[in-house]
Image (tube, rainbow, N blue to C red; front, top):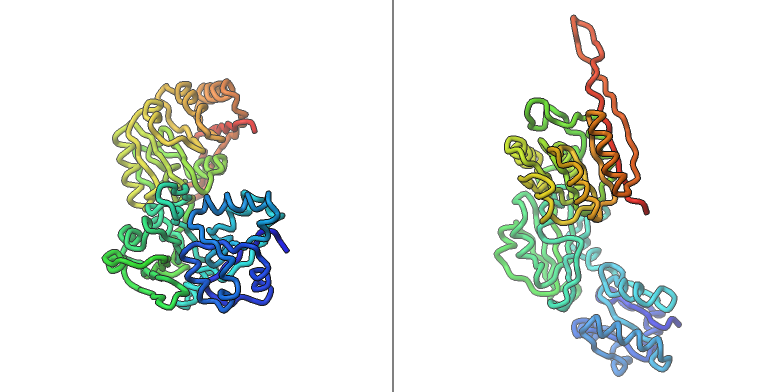
Length: 415
């Protein structure tokens, strides 16, 4: 028998082996809420003297670590809700204690049960946890926040959200666009389980019992009608006097950046924001800062942000490097314009966590300056020369016309 067994409960009967594990345990750890659930199982009366209620995750972990050092306390069963490895305590137990002493026996996850209740498929649903933990004073850092949800629903037909008392259904609904349907599942698996369906406005006006979870379904369009996430053209993007990164160069630049799915991206000297807008659409969970000092260009970025619903683009009106000082530290950086401040910008960027910095140069002088600046800061550099030819019709015949060549410099921090 494993020394620690994490057992999910809540939705289906315990099989014979799981019952035997519980009957053979020295201690069964449960929270107050899970004790209420466990009392509904036939097995409870046979093992109730072994149940120890601990409502703190930290104290549970302390108990398990002590138990592993004292054989007299083993074996231990830890009760969990649904699937312990889906945003549950099982993940933390395995992470801190290792895989060898732990066995995990899942029940159905609450997400599975919720989708089955409304008879909706969930194989392509996007799953989000907004559950910061049971202790409001020790909330864990979450990969998503409520503010991300409106952006995510534009890219996913269905989203399922694990909630908590702070990130509750009414707070979530208050951020949503009107073209979605919201389901709230209260106390799934309990005798007083309740499911509520409504518009964001209707859900935002109500109060719901804990525990609960939320499913959001986008309505009014089909999967085949989804917008193209990458490939905007110069004619679609608002800009001035041809001052825009050309389509082909933009594609290669974004490829060189190797943008993360989430994190922070600085687009310095963003111009019309073509790089920022494409990056934001390509990676909707990425937070983009488009830094631009010229008013006309910054206005173009704002217009493009609205036109293409790039809510994750933040327009910073100011001159780098001064405008960079208060921004969140980036994971990637693109240097488009520099207004003669290239070395100062590189100095600031080099002191950030950014693993990749990309800069485009039109002249050999700028190319040399970028290489020198990055290499002085120990970046490993590569240069790609891009020479683009486009066809045009002249005198009834197609001819090839060359655009100005561009040098794409990529700097990578050594591992």
